[in-house]
Length: 236
Ligand SMILES: Nc1ncnc2c1ncn2[C@@H]1O[C@H](COP(=O)(O)OP(=O)(O)OP(=O)(O)O)[C@@H](O)[C@H]1O
Ligand SMILES: [Mg+2]
Image (tube, rainbow, N blue to C red; front, side, top):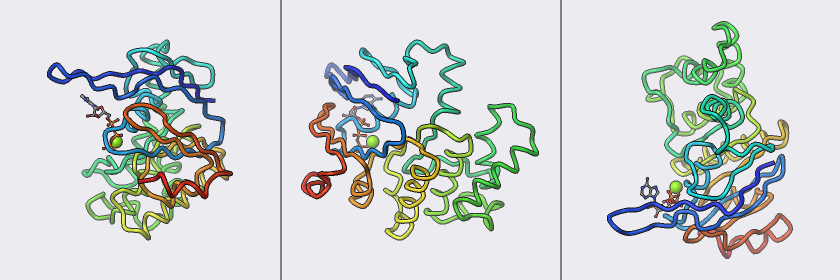
């Protein structure tokens, strides 16, 4: 479903070249749950951003359902980012001036869906993440775990095929993190969403079908479910 071939991305900083992605190739099947692990600066976020169409490659290709992202017109790329992909960030990326309901609803504005339907769908999504009684709260009036659940509702309200999550439990206590992990798992199981999650959290890595380890912009290990017992050795 997702195919990454010879992906390269270099950043130039004051004469120094940083290879954020150094010839990365792998395939992702529909409905797969992949954990991406590796030390800070190894290229994990860069990889997620290129798959999500937020960032382009210097060379190589990202193909999703047969479409090379680099060949999409601006409008189609915008639609891809909004409809096909749902993002979840470590710092939630919610609009603090808007309520939970409005934050989720914002995702639907792009599609030209009438106000009433937007409200209903946003409410529905917030109910699914257990926040029916918090829809009128603004992010500063919510706990970290609740804010992350709002961002999951926002990511799933467009029924995306792919969820890209960057350290979704990084800012949460262990109980809230557990709930987020269960929600991601439910999305995979019930809605067959393909999930790529960057994480340092062993609990996520253990639930994943597959674990990719990145080091200096390269994939150095690609472990599937059956070998999960060795995971602990190499997650950091
Ligand atoms: N906009 C940028 N300009 C210059 N260098 C960048 C930029 N974005 C990322 N880099 C560099 O590219 C490398 C990979 O960055 P990336 O954010 O993908 O790492 P990461 O694995 O997500 O790290 P972390 O776990 O700390 O989030 C890093 O060395 C980083 O300094
Ligand atoms: Mg990162």
